[in-house]
Each structure stands twice: as structure tokens, then as C-alpha cells.
Image (cartoon, rainbow, N blue to C red):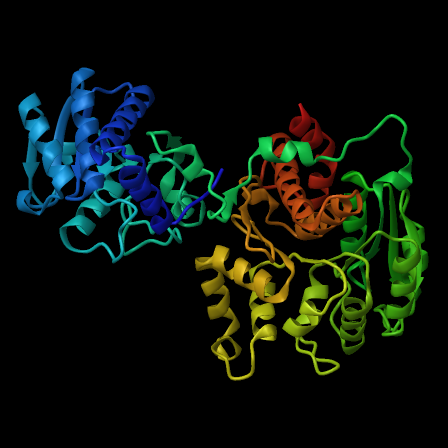
Length: 530
């Protein structure tokens, strides 16, 4: 399902009215009727207050009020606007409501007696809100949030930016939100997602060709669109049919990351996995691996890789591996930076770079190339899987000297990333020619050709050490099984979250650990394909 900005939705609205010929009043009627139907379905109460603003969002609320009146509800409309300040469509709906006997009042405050035993329909501000909520509206929203009164918002919770999900001064915390045509970015990005509650997307007559337009480049991943990506397992097949992944991971004190990445890679369906590790640790690894193979790599003498490891890695991938997954637990050193730079500029094998691989990449400047130029000159597709902290370092590493990113403190840059996850991921992927998985809530996937996908699966229990290592192994596994880079990232992220959800069902969130995600992958595959 496509996900839109306020401007994109306004354009769909404009084309529906002016080009297709559907009157705006008809869309408003359908929107308000859809809200009323949800209120009636969700709540057994028969008293509602519609908080209406002066724009078309308020008009939707007025329609909902008279529809609820027809259904036998005790309805009252409270306008936080002057009557002479209503939009034409909103004013037209008020005139109809007057004729139907819907009670209403214009005033700038709300009291406890007003909301006692009621359901509140929030129709104050829609997707067009462009400045912080202040004055009487801010006081009413604050009162409403503190009252504990159940709220169902129209289109978007008032005070939430429909583009970024940020709170614009103060915002309604809704139990439910009814939106129209398509979900807005602010419904899915935090903190907007927390204020949205359960989201209902209603069809009110927008043409499907507008809702499915290729010009809309952000999409919410859904099971139906991903289940067909799961690689098939023909009866007549061999392990080599499902790809061979070289996982270069682990160092002294960080061996667990390597084991989890490799095991997740196997559990996600890779036919063969070889674990490349520092020579001084090889006995430790050989004593613990079962299904995986091992590759001894030159050691720097301290349980980390030597720069000479690059030649061994490149030789192995050129002859035997289909995918290289590098970074989990490898540490950051001058030697490691040389390894990372060598494989990026020389390898023709698709690769997934995570964790310390990303941290090493951020500090590289070699052969006259900065990080951004190096990534652009890579000979094979590259998938990067940073969390926001690593993303901040990537942005600083790719900034041109003297550019603003270069001088921003890491904490401030991370905050900026969290406030604009979609555009951050998209601009980086386009600028570097890479596929970017920006981990977090929600995880966002962007490709170099301008497409962005938002992941709906996962839970807070997955905020635990090693969860990212599991993800990188899964993405590499799907890549090795023949999926293209974007599909590998999408399926890996979605299945990772789904496995985490399966694990949480059995073990709860508080005690969930990364190995639980791996153990729950079989259940996730069954659910995905069931």
C-alpha cells in the first residue's frame, strides 16, 4: 500500500475533483459517513462530541455528527473556530446539520462535564496543518489527552505532522484514526504512530489509478506483496541451488555476533554458509559451528583481521561465494578499514555491510576516494544496514568538507535522522548508489532508484544485543538465494520482524533475546506462507 505526504494526497484530491469530476462535497460525505460507521462499530456508547475546526477536516466531522444522529447517538458539535471563518464546504455542511437539528456551539474551551461518558471525534486539523498548535486549540487538546476520554481522529490526529509524524506543539492521542485513500507518513513514523492508535484506511471514491501511481515512491510493506518473494524449494534441488554466503564476522570478545549472523543466514534458507574468522580464533569457532564451514583469515595478532585478509576474502568470493556479509563484531581498526575498502572497490560479489563494517567504512579515505565516492564506484551491489547512530556516522563520513553535516554533533545528527527517516534513507541511497536498511522504529528501506518501503513488523523486545546481526544474516541469505537486492532487504526486514513477533508471543518482550528470533524463524516462515 502506498504511503503519501500531505502534498501528494492533496494532489490526488485535486485530480479526483477537477480531472475526474467527483465533487468535493461527495468526497466529504463519504469521508464523514466512513467515520460515523467506525464510531458506531467500535463504541457501544451513544454519546459523542465532535471537535470541529474550520477547514474541510471539520466538514468531515460535521457529516459524521449527523450520520451518528441518524443512528440514534446523542451528538454535539463543538467548533473551535468562528462561523465566518469556516471553509465553503464546511459551512455548507453546517447548514445541513442545522436543518437536521444537530446541536452545536462555537466556543474555545471544553469541560469535564462535556466529555463525561462520551466518545470524542477529533476533526480539528487535517493533513494540511503547517504550524504549531497554540492558544485555545492547544488547551483543548491538552485537556482531552489528560481526561482519558476515548478519541477517534479524522484523517490524522490533530497536531501531528502528516509528513514526519512529529508533534506540532501539542497533539491529540487517539485510540483510533480513520484516514482516507492512503495512509500518511505521519501515521507510521514516531511519535505520530503512537498518537494514531489503530489505523483504518477507508475508500471514499479516489480512483485506484491515482492511489497506485508510480509517482508515489513510498510504500508500506504487506504480507501479500512479500509472500511470493520467499524462495521456492523444488523437490529436485541441491544445497548449491540456495546460494553460498561468506560471513566475515567476529573478533576477540565479539564472537557471538559471528555465530548469530551465520546461524540466521542458515535458518533463512541459504544452502551453504562459510564463516570467515581471524586465525587466532579458528579453534574456538571450529569447536562450536555445526552446519556452517569456516575460513581462516590472516590475523593482526590481537584477534582481529589483518589487512592481508582482504586478498583471502576476494579470492574466496570470486570462486566460491555468491554473497559476502561483512561487519558484525569485526571491530574497528586501521587494518579493518583497509579490508573494507579493498572489498568494496574490488569485489564483484554482492555484499551486505553491517555494524563494525559500517563503522570502519565511515572512517575510510583511501585512493583519493571518500566514503561516498567509494560506494559509488563499487563493482557489485551493496546493502548497508545501519542503526541511527551508524547512519549519523555515515552521513558525517560522506559529507563534503565544509558541508553542514560535517560539523553537526553526532547526537544532533541522530535526532535529525529520527525526525526524517524516509528522506534520510532515500537521499543517501540515491547519492551513493546503495541499498539502505535504516533500522529502527519503523525500519525504512531505500534503493538507489528512489523507492522506499516501510516495515510494519517487529516489537520492542527486539531492541536487544545481536538483533541486527540476525537481520544482516537473513538479508544476505535471501540475496544468495537469488532475490535482487531490494527484494532481499524487504523480505529480510519483514521476516526478521515477524520472527520477533512470533518469539514475543511465546516468551514475552522483556526477556526476548536475539537467538530467540533465529529460533522463531521456522514459525515465521510457516505464518508467512500459510
